[in-house]
Image (cartoon, rainbow, N blue to C red; front, side, top):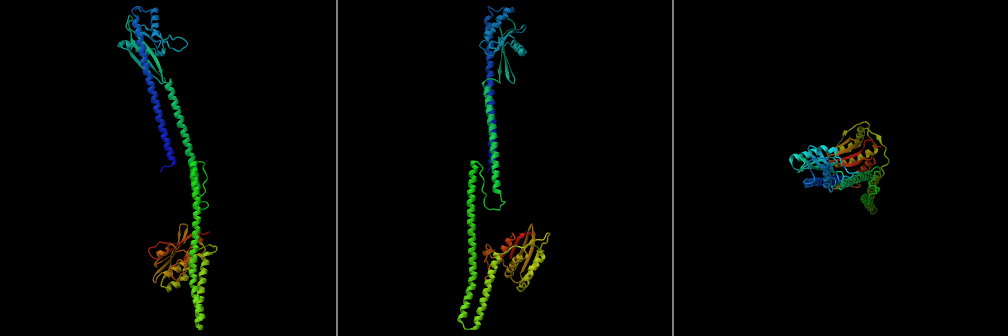
Length: 484
């Protein structure tokens, strides 16, 4: 899905392309208009030249003689003046190959007075075009374009008493003048302002939205407080973004409310499971004590009374151990971390269990014991309780001839204590609640050992887990290498 930035950029590119196309069309339109004006001007100078030739032809029989004098020149000038009177912007005259200019007129000249002098800059061009018309005996035209104007010169041969005479006309078509050029400039200015304004506007939108989206991303990415709830996002003063911000804030509030409800429900469920397990564990000893007490009261045999009292005391001891484990799980106490030499710690933890393991025919041994500098730091008393629980579980669940291995590994910045056995492993129906209180697969178990392991690991800012293994069971306790 393309981003907003890429879509705005695509819009900008389309705008530039359309602007370039429009400018091209405007320039082409102006060029076509200019070409049309040049064509009309060429027709005008050709018609004016023919008009001079027609008037000259009509006047040769009675007014124009073969001798060239001032009177003749005045007559010819009047003839040219009359022929060009209606040809706006056209100047012209009569030319003879030997004598040069015989007459010249520019009736529509917009100066302070009538223009009587030949244009000096175009004199060679006038001479050449007249010579071409005289040589070919046909009208000749010339177009000389330049940056700001196009010069049009036309000549046509004259038939009469004067030998080598030609008529010529000339005009200029200015490309940088007229309504078409004004329209072109206006169109290009409007186009430039539109593109420039659109560029500024789009750039401002891009920068503003990018900055505000970056602020929202930064607000969403804040995790300094360690809170799991969505942060309350500030408004950006953009309608579209603020609607999204309001929706996210409302969603965050609903999620926080639902999370609190779920946490409360989970705590209540945990309390319910704990209460049910505790009730079950307490009810059985109480029922046994009640039965023994009733039997003792109903019997006159002192020996049966003594046996009943002994059974009652054993059940009281069981209840005492149960409550002591509960207190240990819920009141772990403050940690007292120390620098620990792993090999000595593991061996000291294994030794008290060697006799029980040997009695069951199980090999209890230390495996990999990483040593590093600095030494790991944790509470040795609490950590030993976790290993005691794991080792006792392993001994109870490992058949004769099996093996239990304790490893202490340095993994990254973590300490991993691992207890692995070759027993039957953990059944699938108890895996998900393995570390919950009273979760046990043994009839004589309280299900508090692994719960205590989890609580002590959590107190060290670590975790306890059942690690995957090909056979048997593998429990790991992972805590920081240096617990503060």
